[in-house]
Length: 133
Image (tube, rainbow, N blue to C red; front, side, top):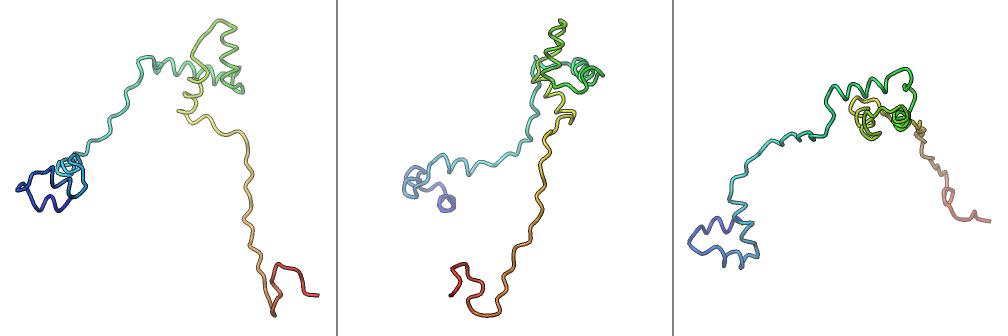
């Protein structure tokens, strides 16, 4: 690539690229100044719950009645009563955004084992093979 820039515009770009085995698009891309654009924030869906609706879901999940129930249970109970707040998946999303969902299984912490240290005071004392007879 640097060779193409050194030669300049005296020789047409196509034969130069062919001789070097470089694509023409790569040369043009390299010459163009790179513009750093900050990432755009993702627009929320028009179907997303309004903040008041999200708070209503949180209030229902935090109520004394549903405080120990899973979102699937809450959803089913509310549907039986004729109330629809949102889907169970949306309930999980709202709980996750408020840091209220965690792994319920307590994983064991394995202790750090000390590697066995083999000390030999003479020849053939640390081998794994059969012992001499």
